Image 1: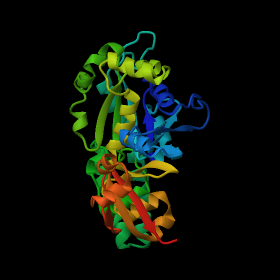
Image 2: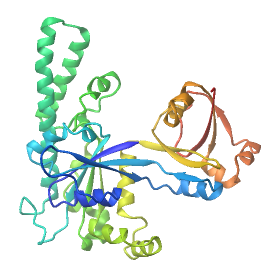
Image 3: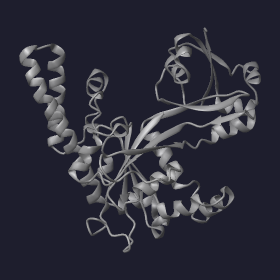
Image 4: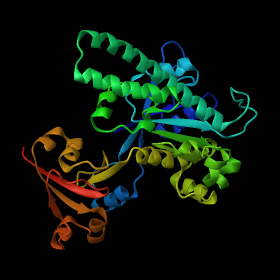
Length: 362
């Protein structure tokens, strides 16, 4: 399951968005040790809905994204540092920064004026400073360890951390380094906050919804979003709260009146999913239709492990059919008759929309 940690300044709508996304209504604890509330959102996918209508299984299980929310503002330096001590944030695959664009005199901004560009840069700076503290402490320890045993591995780690420190001191997040392979693996255990992909959720005024497509420019964030692994999605939390209280038919009519094809909440969930380069494959049958989340480029044997490690261990072949072929033919048997069902080996790279049955030894 994908995991994302929500960050944001007070009065940005962060906790409201978390509650809307996850249906968790209790606010996070606001005293003592920093703690996170965790909730799960389903990833909307019309393909799974159509497969369920075709097979009519007992269970329908969409892919999911886990969101975490922490009390207070991860804005003061101590707040950003505190995130490093909260497991759902350390372990998050991405950070979701809820940025205030709405204007409401009854909800004062902690900095007195609404300035999304300032808030985004300030938050980025505080996350960078938190990571810089981690890097400096690790480099101090490495220096001591190298005096005792100067191994090649420790030297390589030191070299990479020197590069990280230089980037952070220049005000650049670690995601900008785009490290891969062994270098990325060496840093994985640190769970650096600025290395995580970043999604900006731009919380608009209701009056600005007709210009939602232009929200990035209006917020002055065009240059910021040229950075690596950084995206933005506009929503209006006030409207989303109203939509969440409607039945599906009325909600759809409300969205149509606003000129929207899907809710902002669905767009936040989908954007979180897409930001990380994840895709979905499906398993179907009488008992269950299910969407499974995997990184793009995952081979079949590893994809099988998402279902169960025993399936990956005993992997024999993957029976694969494209979603659109299955929907057009109506049955797996018809796809087989038309040569659209393929047998693939463990190195086959699973594609978005594949419907797969894994053959495996028991």
